[in-house]
Each structure stands twice: as structure tokens, then as C-alpha cells.
Image (tube, rainbow, N blue to C red; front, side, top):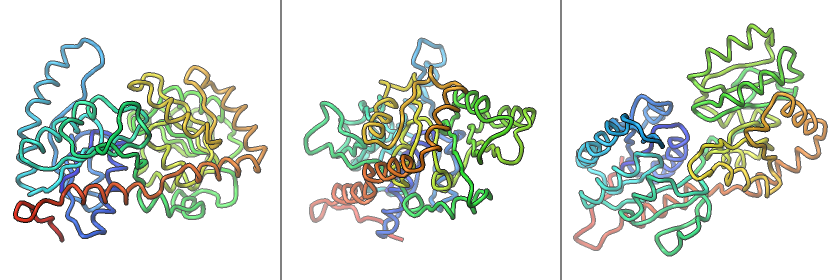
Amino acid sequence: MVIAAGGTAGHIMPALALAEELRDRGHEVSFVGVGGRAGSGIPERNGYPEDHVPLRGFERKLSIRNLWRAVLAVLAVPRMMGVLRRRKADVVVGGGGYMAGPAAIAGRLTRRRVVLMEADSRLGLANRLAAPFAKRVALAFPVAGRRGRKYMVTGRPVSRAVREATREGGRLKLGIDPSGTCVLIAGGSQGAQSINDAAIEAFCPTPPFQVVHVAGERNEADVRARVDAGGCGPRYHVYGFLDDFPQAIAAADLVISRSGGSVFELAAVGRPAILIPYPHATADHQTGNARWLSEAGAAIMLTDDECTGDRLRELVGALLAEPGRLEVMGDAARAAARPDAAERIADMVESVARRPRGQRRRLRRR
């Protein structure tokens, strides 16, 4: 089977969790990505064949660049059909992002079954367009108007590495003090300028605890230069991107982050969080994601406008001063998690792959 995942690590990671479960069940899995993005190469580093189909998401404004992106989208369908035939795929799984549309159309045109995964609290544009071509759609959250047998709320898949990550292992991996307090700051795979600015203002030049700051690959050099110039010292660790992000979550006592699909990783590991939704996310879905954990008692939601150095310093200080409150929030996060999401979606994939006798294409096994 082939998993088609969009251009960011946020789409790749849940798709990898599903691939891990399918591979453990004996199925052969390969990936199709757009190439040249933050998540490119991650499937190959995890042992999965990876094909690339040139594609870019549309800008949400009138732009001449959208004409070229429309051409790429049209050309992506026959290219994707070629990948499916070459890989002899039985099922196409749309792992999220703008790759889902061409993948679903190519799957239908080549008479393959299509399953979609939606990681956010709103059905994204690509998945809305692809849904008519899909046999089943796995939802991370209930979505208004999406009911019936086609749709199932499964949660967002998290890998075994997420479920098994430990504080001790995470700190050993990152090379930080195993006994002191640690705060993780992350703005998603693309980084977040407002969070980067507020974090440096809040915790430099003398961070009162270990800081692990994942700034985004495009922001890493700038953030590192500012941290070095500010004399923040060896307790402030800057990264552009972490392949083993679950270990960083597990290493932390508190997480400050955007609220994309990674909220399920926070829940699975059981870490309290300050969540700052990206204000321009499609249909404001990150606010819905953050609300899910905040209403469960596992997180505090902060708007992007409120994300200043003074406010972060105040909130973090208040939370760290109450270890009992952090423990309660962590327990609430674990209670809200759906650790069996990968297994449930794998069951769904296997179910749609079954065909009547004489018509069933054999599932390829290693």
C-alpha cells in the first residue's frame, strides 16, 4: 500500500505511526511526498521507500504563483497514478495536506481503495475535496456534518516511540541535566516567529532552567545568533528541527508550542502545555485543537497576540512554582489521549482492502 503525505513533518509523523503499525502486521508500505520540504526524507530514514511528486499548496490569496501550482496539481494526478502502478499498491492512504487530493483521484482512477486521515479539528481543504473519492475517513476529532459509516473518530496516530518515550531517555538523548527543570519551546515544523521572539525575551540572558528551543529550520540561524549574542549560556539549547521530537516532549516538565497535530503527542506522553494557536490556520483549527486539551485541564491556551516575553515568563513561573498542578495537568493529558489510533486506522485500511473472492488484489507482504 502507498501512504501519500503532504509537505510538512506535521503530516509525516502520524502517517509514519500508521505505517509502523501496518508494517508490524506484515504489510509492505511506501510513501509519496512532495520533496524539498521539512518532512522530506523522514520516511526513508525510517526504512520506507519514498517517491516524490512535485506539488505545492495554494496561497490563500490571489497570486500569479497559484497558476503554476494549479498546473502542478493537475500533473500530480498522472504522476501519482504511475507511482501506484509501479508500487503495485492495494490501498492509498491520504496522510494529510495538499497531497491528499491528487492521491485520492489517482487512487480512484486506478481502481484502488482510498482512506484519508484528518489530524485537526476541521477537515482541511484537500481532504474536503478528496472525501468523495475515499472509502473511509479517519478523524482526529468529531467534525460537524461528517457522520455515517464513511467517517470514524479515531484520534491522531502516534508512534510507538511517542508512547514509550521517557523523561530519563529524553534527557539522555538531548544531553541535558537529568535532575533539573526543563521547558520545551516549539513552533511547529516551520517555526513560529512570535513564539521565538517571546521565548528569547522571556528566558534570556539568564534562563532559570534548561530550555530546549526548536526554532524551525528556516529560523535556526537567526535564533541561535540572537541567543549567542544575548549570552544565554549553556542552559539554552537551540535546534532547527528534531527527528526524535517525542523524546524532547518526554524530557520536558512543561511544553510551550503551537497546537497543530502535535497536541496528540503531548497527550500521549502526558505533558502539561501552554498552547499558542497559529492565528492564520485554516478555519482556525489550531484553536480547536488547543481548546480540546485546555478544556480537559491539560493545557493553558494563549492567543498569539498575548504571546509576549513578559506573559510567558509570568505563566511559566506560576506553573513551575506549583509542581502539584503540573502533575494534575499531565494526568489530564494522558486521560485525553487516544493511544490506539494507529491500530484503529490500520484495522480500517485492512478492512477496505478486502475484496470479493476473485477480485481481491493480494496485499503485498515483505
